[in-house]
Each structure stands twice: as structure tokens, then as C-alpha cells.
Image 1 (tube, rainbow, N blue to C red):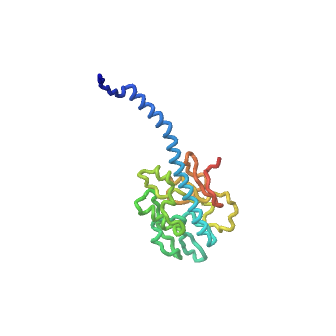
Image 2: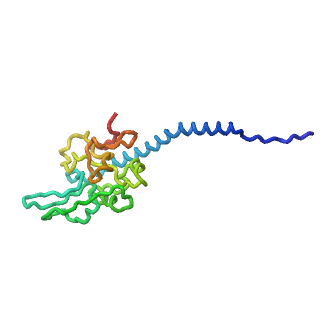
Image 3: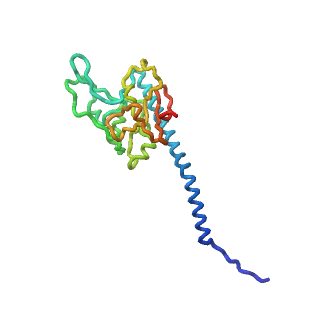
Length: 225
């Protein structure tokens, strides 16, 4: 019997180029779907954060008042003494003012924020010194995953702001449940010195939409469709 040797045939250059082209087309088609799925997960985590901030606010408001959207000194009484009111987030050096007053003169300068400092000093202390920290202990709660991914070296520690119109209000007198309580903060980079905003300052990080939580507790995309 005559034995014929088998000739092993490899891919030709044209065949290899064709395979590469097909793989590139498939990658082009799949990349948007993968990106959207990843953003969907981040947006869901962001909504969960806002819901937890809402629940923390409701616990804090059991004393009758909503938290303050920012930290400030104020005068009270005929003696014009100065008192400190901490916000839901506050100055990183707020712990240098352990008493809320009274003081005969307003301390100066006021504290500052550093929301890009993720190395545990100023930005983190702004959160842990705030009045909501006792009800929402978890640094990740205060930062949107999408916003964090957008920042240099993922250094953001805070992404949300509180509606200034609801700042330190008698909770039982607030009747409009369609008011935004917290939301993605569009002005956090340009005006990082407070944790308050109005509803025209909601960031559109999530496919040109922003996440907000309303006073009645429901979370949705903003602006609504």
C-alpha cells in the first residue's frame, strides 16, 4: 500500500485578514452594548446611594427639621452671639469648632472643601463631620460611580448636592413631594465650596440624564422624559 504524506495547510494572508476584519466588526458592534451595560450598573448604584441619603435624611428629620444644605455661622437672640450650624456635609476643619456657640465674634476664615482628595484627609472629613454621617456611614454612599470614573485617578469623594430650598426646614410643613431632595451635582467642579444646588444644576452623567431622589423617596432620571 502506498502511503501518501499529508500536507498541513496553514491560513493564507487573505484568510487571516478576513478573520481580523470580522473580529473588529463584532467588537465594534458589542462595545456600545458593553458600555451601556456598565453605565447601567453604575447608574443603579448611584440611585441606591441617593435612596440611602434620603433614608438618612428621614432619620435625621425625626427631630423635626431637615438638615442644612450648607454649613454657616448665624446670629441668634438680642445678644448677637454667633452659632455654628453644620450641614449634611460640612467643612473639613469643622471639628476645630466642637461647640455650636455662643461666640461673641464670628470665627474666620470658614472651612473649605476638597472633593478631589480621595487620600482620606480633607474630602473624607467633610463627609464624616456632616450631620448625616451618623445615619449613612459609608464613604461610597456619597460618591456616584460614574462621576468617580470620570475624575482624574478616580479621586472624587462626593458627587451629590442637596436642594437648597429644603435646607433646615420644618419637615412637617413641607407638602410638595415633587421637590428634588438630592441629586447629581453639576457644579461640584466649578463651585466646590458647598453641598447645595437648585434643580437646574443636576449633572447629566448618565447618558445625558441625572439621577435625583425626591422628597417622597422615589428616585428617577432627571429631567423626566
